Image (cartoon, rainbow, N blue to C red):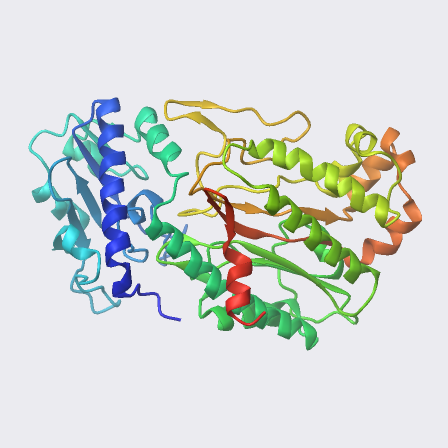
Length: 447
């Protein structure tokens, strides 16, 4: 997989660039800021050692430029002027350095190679008292006399606006889904062949042509009962004696934009496979409801009502939707939120934000883990990821309360060895509904 964007992206990027200029100008005016300094980020040396941790780029930097692997660079943004990019490109015989880029986006910037970050001082305005630094704190801000570091009002304004994706961003997210679909299919094939979690993980990396440091987050590769651990963080190198089920939550990256996809599989045609199929039906039904103006939190609560139907259908519980919600039964089987914004970051910012000025839209009562409470609007991109899990600690708590009387515990015990199910797609909201970027990607890959 190539990580370069084709020249077909020149026009979408030009529109994206103009949108960023407008958004940043408005945010700067509201915050009474004249200039922005946006660093790519720094390398950090491990404690008591001489190697660095993997570099993670500042999302506010890659918002402007698709440069994700070059620390010690700096953007200088002044409304009405061509942005300047101090691009880190030293002479170094220990490491590979990056030449000054020439690509579809570079004509929009005045690019200056620098051997170290402090050389960027020559690109700065004389007076930095009305300048804001947007990134991790750095000693240079004090040395240079930068007026403010990450001012809250400015950050709030930019974070709120990131919910609306440009055409360029949507295309990057679409491509990230295409790459991840190939990787997911390679992982499923490894599972079908009896591989260990580690070998499935390696198959995923090969299928997506990513190394581990290029992944948007650590892959969740869970066989059997491990699928009941929501953020299962290991990959066992030993294959289990029996492959009953497989849950994989994994994404890929395209020019700094992330996909986030989950699929669950059964090893054979059994009742757990039927439950997976039913959860696909539930997930698609949720997606079919998506429309501009809908409250995402209401979509989340409605998912619990749909899950109550599934629990009844499969004999896992017995009671009305209202009773299963009121007594916490659905929350024990589905404890996390329905989804989150997606983009430059996997859990993209602003999901609970009330306005560009800040503030918070509260989560629904009894749903503390929901990451998105804003109204749905055109050109938002978010995940839809309902789940149904058999988590021992949550079920033990449920059993001791009033909701325990509504559960068929023999049926629950029969499903415990399979761990659980999550189905997650990446959704782009349109004027008349939505585009499912994930299922579109699997279809394009022949699934």
